[in-house]
Each structure stands twice: as C-alpha cells, then as structure tokens.
Length: 320
Image 1 (cartoon, rainbow, N blue to C red):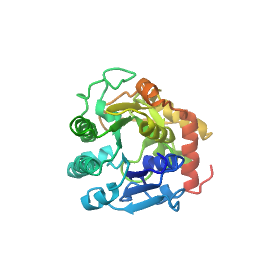
Image 2 (image 1 turned 135 degrees about the vertical axis):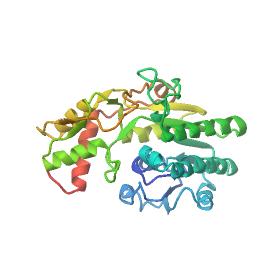
Image 3 (image 1 turned 180 degrees about the horizontal axis):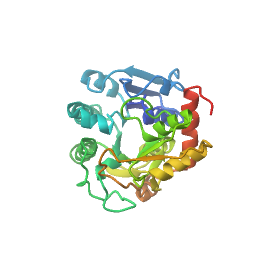
Image 4 (image 1 turned 180 degrees about the vertical axis):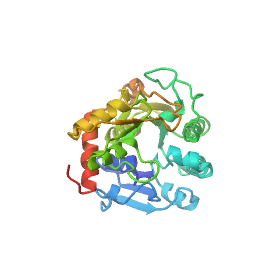
C-alpha cells in the first residue's frame, strides 16, 4: 500500500473517516475522498483534512464525470458511499441512483482504469432474518425485505460478476450494527442510542418500544475500519465477509450498559411497538474473516459505549 493512490467514496462519513485514518499509517502517496457532505462532514475529517496526502473532493457520486476523475490513476478503491436504510425506503429512486446505478458506474470505471482491488461496503441487511445464529456468510439472502439490503446484495453480485467476466479483484464486507463516535446524531432516523444519550443528558426516562428483546450485533466503528484495511492487505479476492462483534445484545441490555457507563440511575419506560421489525435477531459469525483476513474485533460494547458517550457529550459541550 505504500506509495499507492487510494480512492474512497463516502470518505468523510462515519465509517469512511476512520478508514482514512487507518490507511494513513501505511503511507500511501495519495488518498482521494469523494463526499457530498450530506451524511459526511468536515468535522469527521478534522484529524486529517490538512494532511498533504489527502485530496478532498466535495461532490456527488452520481456525477459520472467527477467520479471518473477520482478513479483515474487509483490503485485501490473503497466504495463506502450509501444512503441509510430508511432513506432508501422513503425515496427508492434516490436509492436506485446512489446504491445501484452509481455502483455500476464505479465498477465500469474501476475496470477502465485498471484498479487493482475494490473493497465494497455491504451489510448484514442482505440476510434479512437469518436462518442460523451465529450467521455465517453461507446463509441465503431470500428473507431480506428491504430496498437497502437488496441494493447491497446487488452490489456484491455486480463485483462478483465483474471478477468472473473481467478479472476485477474485490472483497465485500457485510457490516453488522456499526456504532461509535461520529455516528449520525441528527435527523429523522437518529440511532436509538443517540436518543437515549439525550435522555441521560436531560434526566428523562429513556423509551423502549416493544419488550426490548430485539437483538443486534454491535460492532465498534474502529474495528470496522481495521477490517477494511485487512481486506485490502489480504491476498484474497471474490469473497464476502461478516464484520460483527460476535455478541448478541438485546435493546434492554444495550440500554443497561449505556446507563452503566454514564453512571445513570434512570429507569426505562416501555411503550407499545410503533412499527413491525422483520429482523428480530442479529449475530455474526466472523470465523471466515478471522481465517482469511486475520481480523478479530477488539473493542467491547462497554468500552465502545463509553467512548461514544464521551464524544457525544463533549460535542455538545455538556458535562454530566
């Protein structure tokens, strides 16, 4: 990777900015970041924006001419730009343009400009409600009901077909429930843990909709960034890997841990579930990533939630 040119779509985003920080340790010649700053931000890039290796391009991945300028000459590409799952549901046409059409254009350009390897950000959403727990990569995707999950799976299949037809090397990473400092904090689709942090700040009872038994596999963002770099460095191609923490955590357990790391004695209030969640369980099997990428998560939920809390309250200049 030393002296290589790397292009990252969505590099000013939550996960992308951590990937940039990880990559800088390997002394690449240049890292080009394309981001429209709708989900990403200049704040996320604060630690590296003035680094001479970094070239930040503010623009939309749907701008093919701009996309080609960024890809031209790149040795490696990280494709991380995406809409949120709820944004895809609310605006399927935007979802199509960003998640499918632009991914196709990127694959075409990677082929044209002889990119050596693509690291594609996929999602555990491809499984829907999985058949097995822990979930291996061999579980089928037929239970997925979301546009987002379908789009992510299509991206995997696109790169797989381009490997078969044209020899374009790639690795797909299926992220489970990524959280941490710099995660989205504003807007209609704010993560539940941010809403709970607001309750802790304001001394209000945090709300749990339903019985709190829904589980997720929460993986800290710095671990996800390490998995991305491991996927680039490993001598592996044409494979998809789960990236989770390999721990199943219910919403009740999540809130308990969040209250604990913030020394809060608040008690939750339970409300009737206001939506139907077709995915009631998530638990990753990372065996394949361990064997092929030498990747293992290293940050516990308690440690990650503490770091998230410190960042969030410092961001608001609030002391608890």
